[in-house]
Amino acid sequence: IPSRLRGRGVEVSKTLFYSKGVSLTGYGLAYQGDFENMLHRVTNGRLQHEMLVRASKSEKPGRKAIDATAGMGEDGFLLAAQGYEVTLYEQNPVIAVLLKDALRRAKKHPVLKEIAARMKLTEGNSVELMPALLDPVDVIYLDPMFPARQKSSLINKKLQLIQKLEPPCSQETDLFDAAISADPDKIIVKRPLKSDFLAGRKPSYTLSGKAIRYDCYTL
Image 1: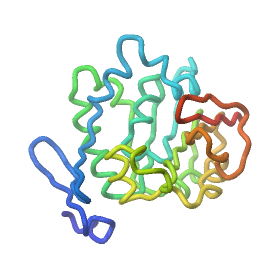
Image 2 (image 1 turned 90 degrees about the horizontal axis):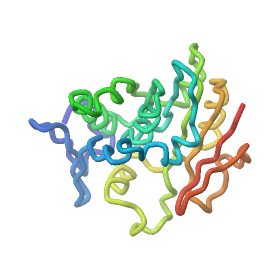
Image 3 (image 1 turned 60 degrees about the vertical axis):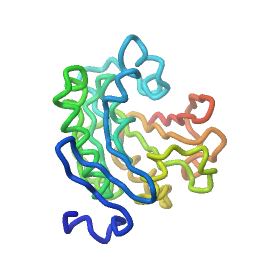
């Protein structure tokens, strides 16, 4: 394990580097980032049915988005598939290594490479990075993750392992304020269906599904 990852949640897990990429094991779970499992969501006309794509719909040329809570980058991938140039912020170094490896492999995939080419990973705290942005951005996406109090049966194994390393955001107001300071056209927040608004702020409108919703703030 690289020295920069030690003491950052990997004492009870292992980051394994091997020929097929980087894998994380621990807590009786194992996970490797892989955008290939997103193929069915972005092909054969399915992309336009994704709620996040509907929430971020735009035909603006050169549109840019920030995924300020990247995790394993799956939502950022949907934004990139929709045509955005996406900057992904991830502050946990272990998750960043997994995501970087997943992007590396995606950029070699015959179908995924065009989408992955529009994704750029930046390791760091988005609360600190967003206020320093100089270039205009169209959309900022926030997913503070589902609260830990949810029953574990409702959370898949990948999310269980990621939450061990990076618990749900406890600084929601700071996160929202940092997004506003970047002056985007829109902020999109992913929330559990029945949860409170992020930082208690009512959205301009909401798109709701069976288990989650997207609160949209037009600025």
